[in-house]
Length: 258
Image 1 (cartoon, one colour):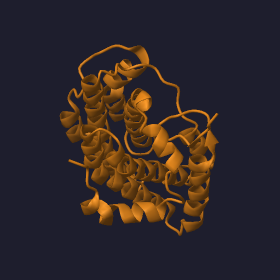
Image 2 (image 1 turned 45 degrees about the vertical axis):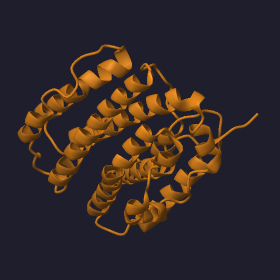
Image 3 (image 1 turned 135 degrees about the vertical axis):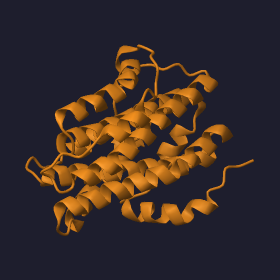
Image 4 (image 1 turned 120 degrees about the vertical axis):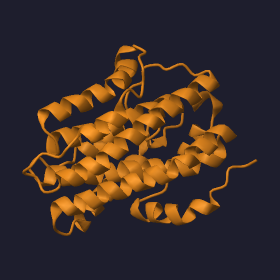
């Protein structure tokens, strides 16, 4: 039975309008090749951890005190041990208990909102990490080291270096990364094995909400119109997605063909 996206179009329309371009057909063709499945799944797994790490950084930098920050680091450590040190430990841990222990520090008006939205995002991204690992095991794809794509680095490189605009820009970048992930999950779902396609469709609602949460926080922190800055990153993100890219990754650009 083919994967259907018809019931998700209302969710996907704002994503497609927010992004400056669609994923190139040439990237989709490359992603659908069986020989690229391992790369796709491993890099997707890495992206889930990086998304959680970004949210942890935002909470530690802006929303909680040092002790709570240490608790967050302990939360993600088993996942980092697996990815960076190839040490398999218990994933999941006591994250539900941890959530109840965190409280926003005083002195930053948006700390509670960042804490609320980012804790939920961390929980979901780490759960997705675990799901991708399970899918990889089912497909016989062992976890292996993989270099990062140019994509996130290209976006973060344009972030301003003075507050509150550093935070605003990082939140805008987060919105674009989540939106692009959502768009690619939707485009990939009908092209891959049905079990992977169903899994990617199951991620659409959370990825769409993550994009909205990031953008909402960016507007709240800025306290002024940020449309020009969003447009700047829209153009930059589209350039990274459309321009030739010699490396195939989940967020890579148009494949370079021989």
